[in-house]
Amino acid sequence: MSSILRAIILVTLLAGCSFSGGNVNAPQNLDNACSILDQRRSFLPAFKAAKRKYGVPVSVQMAIIWQESKFKAKAKTPRKYKLWIIPAGRQSSAYGYSQALDGTWKEYKASAGRWGASRTNIRDSADFMGWYMAQSQRELGISMSDTRNQYLAYHEGRTGYRRGSYKSKRWLVKVANRLEDRAIRYRSQLRRCVKT
Image (cartoon, rainbow, N blue to C red; front, side):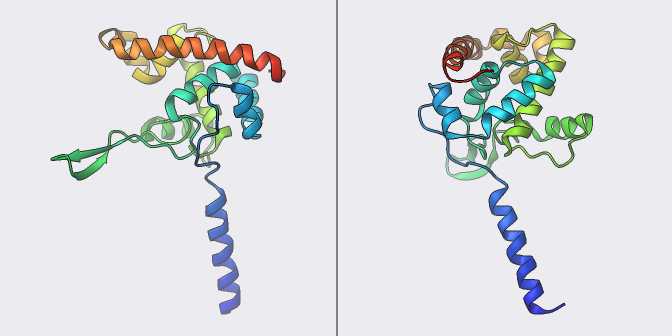
């Protein structure tokens, strides 16, 4: 193989890697759903696709993504440290827009047949959230528009939710209650700027 052909292949591969991650930084004005969607044109089609496929409202998806990653494509959990200075990995394997854990993401890809899905892709992350919430609706009876309980099941896992593990975590219940309010606010804003 000629050196020119090798160079072209290498440049093509590197270019593909640089564009696969989406927007790394969060949009501005995260309290305004219309502003978010105006800044990230790929978001609304992704959220609408998940709504059509699973029935999860756009406002619920946006509220949970706000909580999980603040709309950052490559969001990671904070680092852990030993003796306050020695890096010791991350708090969990949660990654991307949806903060899906490695094991849950692997299960999703196998179950949904989406082997090429990426946690840094908004369409894949929205589809993952819809898939997960549809299972929570089926197994736990949680309505797709019930942001509070969908989030508690998302955060604790369906088994943890079923056991009521969140009940001993007052901070988490407060977060879920505030998320319900955020979803209501987003829904009201979305009525003014898009047909969802």
